Length: 518
Image 1 (tube, helix red, strand yellow):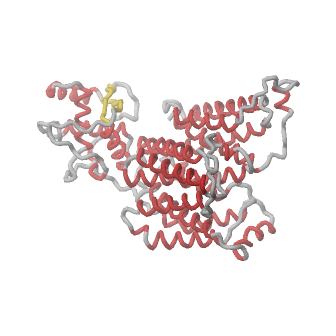
Image 2 (tube, one colour; image 1 turned 90 degrees about the vertical axis):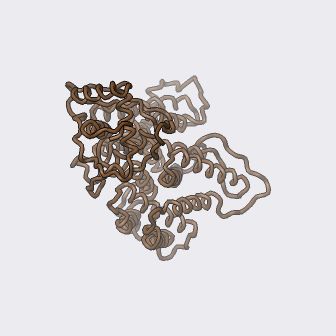
Image 3 (cartoon, one colour; image 1 turned 135 degrees about the horizontal axis):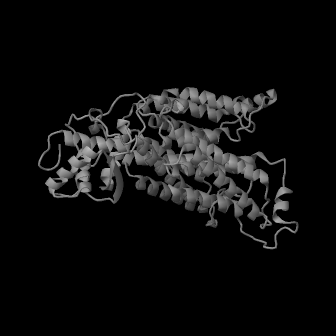
């Protein structure tokens, strides 16, 4: 998680300091005086939105990356202070870049974006507290994609009470031309939102609120300046509702269709109107250069839309295959092919930025998914799960070693009596205490589908309470077993620590077989 946070910091630094044309003589009146005198009260909406959005993921990932032993307030203060200092340093360095305009207002909006991101992470980390019941235990990864889509639709987030503005925002709905490409993008976008609503609140059928969410977004678009509702919006939303509730929602596994729809939308947006050109256009290998010029408002919209589409493609592929790396590889390769195809299509700007966006969005989603599993969100319908309901690797044949996909160190805190029992069992098996715990956990996550053992039947060890008297063992767990353990924790509504101790407790309390399985 810290590496991901560092990656986003590097992106912010690159965007703030490009094109690196330093003039080391600096301002003649001094650095601080030049920064104080550089205020421009007429900062454009695009600059405000760009500075805000640039630091929002830094604040969000920073809160998740800090040591969980720190209190929420301490983490919030540290992240906000560190990012405010980073924003100030970047503006001071800009004073040595003749091509950039340093401003304290940029620091203010960078800090505001950091605070917003850190606040979202703080709310999500307390997703089971009464104060944040609005989240309803939503999983962070699909929720982040939903927020990206809503931000894309509602940027620049500035409402107005001008009646003439309302009329102008509705005129394209009656008199404007129909944009087929925009209609397709909207329809696919809303279909992906319906799928993400199901994934964020599994079992709760939140996709039934899709029409209400559409109506709310259209209403807000009328109120927000520089936005409008046109025929493509209305037709796209209608197609999405009919296609989702009439067909896709009835499928047990709709991921294949959704992947095809997202990929088709990316290709359509990247290659339309499919006008070939005889000579190949140059490919730009400088990252994010396309976002550093022109209208910052349009650039912010484009970045949000692409983050949603690319992240959605990775997320759905991962849900279909169960392999995160596969989704990243397929999405990055596909987007790279579209970008290279743009060298032969008129009206496009082929660059390396979009494949990099795929990788950044993917890394963020993987981090959020791991955070979702680790905090073990409860199911929204409140039903308990059996361990057999979680997907897990197939059990190996006796005498065979499970396929190793790396090792994960797992700290397990046990009561003294439980530790003594486990120690005696380890002596019987001729292994270490950690080896005995690993064998029990592996047997539990590979439990037969005919087993009727329930996760709620075991009394958990008090690992979330005071640690006095507890003994902590570090267990080296195989990667595939650890991933299955995370999934079981997610489904059973428990933390990984409590679930692990419950497995060991239940094993020690029940009959034992000769191979170490209950």
